[in-house]
Structure formats: C-alpha cells, structure tokens
Image 1 (tube, one colour):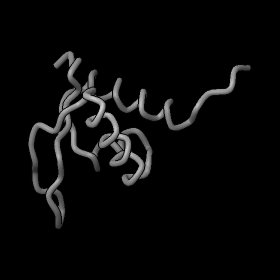
Image 2 (cartoon, one colour):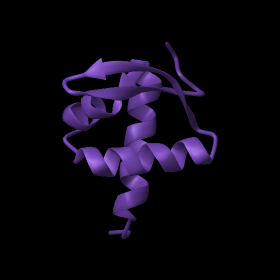
Image 3 (tube, helix red, strand yellow):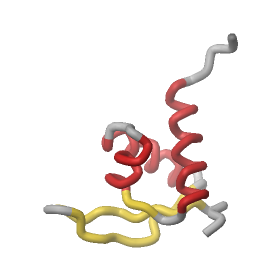
Image 4 (tube, one colour):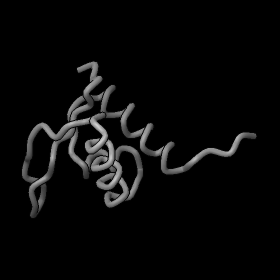
Length: 76
C-alpha cells in the first residue's frame, strides 16, 4: 500500500468538507471532522495562505470570537 502524508490528507479532507458544506467555523469543523481544534486552525491558516480558502466573517462562540471559513471552490 502506498504511504500517504497524514497532514496533507487532513488538509484535503478539510478543504473538501468546507467546499461541500459551506461556510463553517473552526470549532465546528473540528467537531464534525473529529480533529483537534488546533490542528484545524493550523490547516485553515495554511490553506488560506495558499489561496484555497478565505475567511468570510466572525461569529461569537462560547467565550470567544470564531472565524467563519469558505472554500474558493465552494458549491454553496
């Protein structure tokens, strides 16, 4: 079996999920994808830096503001 990069795989899963399900916050993405929030945050920052997603707003999560993200190839 071909060995794959776990980090690259997680980034692609995250990107595909945001493209399919529309704008979502970091915490909600982490919950739905069963990834640690810090990992999701770092992956989103990388995807944003490379132009694959963009931050489209903020909302208030319990006790802190949360970013809302959207894929540039979003179907929604």
